[in-house]
Length: 384
Image (cartoon, rainbow, N blue to C red; front, top):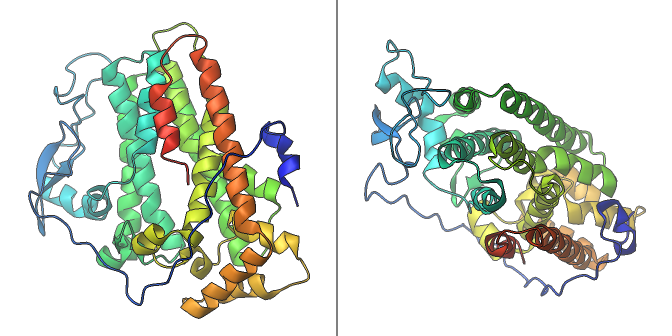
């Protein structure tokens, strides 16, 4: 098992861990508080410039057949010309197919990826119309992938609300997610750049490879090594960060920019390891996703992997994962097992090292010109 001194595979051997406060103990709620949707307007959740269509059960919804750039309307010429939907496909039918996607779409996440993309564009100077296409593409992929993840993980809550497949059914939700994968591909075609399409396909393959290994370990009850887990994260979680950077590089107006791929990988690892930690230690996550949901899923998360490898003769934790229990007392015992092996402290230290490496990469880029303020602010959101 890797120790903090051994994390040279991530180029952090010389970094001292940042001070990160210990997590407070959290109490599993008997019934999570479920925030209600706001009904101030059915179009409040729409991204700028997206047209309206009628959705059964909703007043209006987003039709992604015509996505404008920064609210200016679709381009009328060149590679950015909108790939309009077949006129024979009724808007009402589009609303039916899109409904599970839109259900999740209107409850936004933290928006870290968008903030990172816009901050890096200080250096890349991608034209705003093309940057909007890249942002929309990444947003579609991310939202659609969450719909599938929740089904594969048998989740019950997402962002404090019932998961889409418990509202619309598994079959309709799978179809809606797959539909928006292709809508995203249709959107990236507007760039008119074969390199952009190649990057998109390659990173989508990597994403599914990473997800496949994560599911395999869970379903086969195989605890991966820390290095194997980090490789999986690079494919799965780091893929969307990396893809955004590669797409921006194809559209940049500057002949050369800093190499952002390493920073994208660090952001991806940080994003996932922090999520693993918060899932087991954060009251906010308990409200949004349920108490220690990763244990009910049976997931080999970063703290779990560390704990199992620290004491391989103790079979308690791996057997809790095997049960996929929703019992709060059982999950509290699993948390106690990880506390005994120092796994949460180790995870906090690892997160601190990732943050320090990311800040170093950002500052190195800043030395070559360009403001680092917004990238550091995005990184601040990933601190514990």
